[in-house]
Image (cartoon, rainbow, N blue to C red; front, side):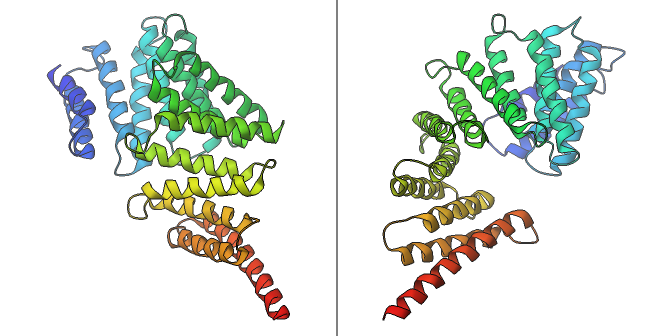
Length: 346
């Protein structure tokens, strides 16, 4: 019991070395399991397995795949005892945790992992109702929306519409007044789903996405939530860049400002992949800017794409590398056309 409690304390410790805290939590849970066997103390055995799964899922270092696979195995062990009939609330909790681990699994059959995650969240929602467990119900709906939004196969429109419905359900409980941080998270997620919706009124979808990102930024300030603030600014910039109507120049200038805001936090040293993503997005917006000094805009776009390629190399990120290379070639071609025109008129 002491080892389990020690593991919980390490798991929740907000300061110090996060990896070391989690590794000590894992060791404490494993010690508890030397005595709390399934035969001797099944309920405690299941509880520790659920806690062990949480610690493994959060471990920031080592093989991410291996950590998550061990977490999934721990949750599945817990479910051998925590059945819906005997322990419905605990059964729902483990199913929600299992869904999160499956959603995060970086390898294997992505579609199958996400479909299993969706089934796990839906199982949790069989017990977690809005009336009996409103906060848990909102959590599961947000997680379900994330899994549906990431599903790479099936009817993309239908998946995203279901994701949007799940996020809207979560917002029925997670209000700005009662749960501001959770409210901001769901608004950012909702913005992503609306931005990617392939059908319907594209302008309206994007305007709603922009409103959702701006809602998130009411809570996610740079001072309190710098990483989330940067993420929402990058997402906002992408939505503004894609807006097909309104003042195109103004939309793109706002997008450029948003990407530049994200880059105040996303440095190459601390967040190299995000830094590259924001620079690619910035380059696209600068390349498309229809007003101002066109040559200067294109030269800045080229520098942005070259910055992204410092991280997104062909070896490490082949798909992203190809995308940036294509953007870079377009910018170089446009610049050569402008330069040729100027040469011809001089």
